[in-house]
Image (cartoon, rainbow, N blue to C red; front, side):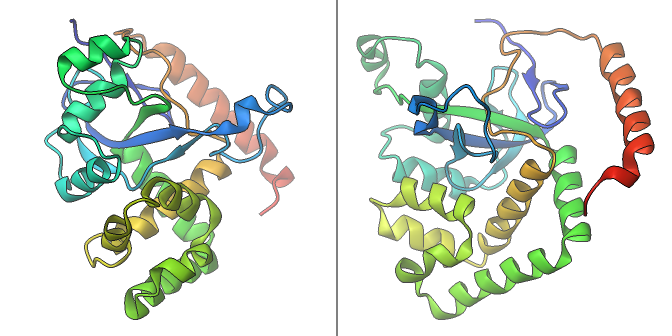
Length: 248
């Protein structure tokens, strides 16, 4: 199988082999089965929502991630999903969801229907997080204090709802059958900053009207960047002209 460029879920720029990425596994939500599907969505996580925390590493040129910097989080996601292989096998299995269950069984795993992946350039995520921290200081401080409260009191099961709907609903749904995994996420000095960062990034996704979605352009190596450059200039021109129309 050949290699290909990934696609950043924020900038839509191609992601090349070896570039720094933020990688998420997503779970398909049930909104598409509702009568209102097709009329548009309000929140970024209505079609898909993140499963757990982000994984940091390098793009592997095949739609996945390598040189993972936070392997304990990756291992936690695998355990909670009750997957029998490694995190890399899990990503491969999601990528092979077009195969039949028999095909996947021959490879040693079962299908992970309803799961997909997305990725972002690390620089784009860093920019969004810093922007939200700067423009929504009160919100950032509130979530920071609530997460620290959970770490201090360890009242995980009864207090999950206080952290905010998109973060906790996705984590709680995914980890509901694994209390030890959930406690690991909320009771670790290592993961506490990532919980906060994930929540702030999710706020940013809503701010820029970006949905959590699998990438477009999978399997493509289109290198043309001139259209991105011209579009970026047009976006800057638009924001300069319409700055006074925005509500803050």
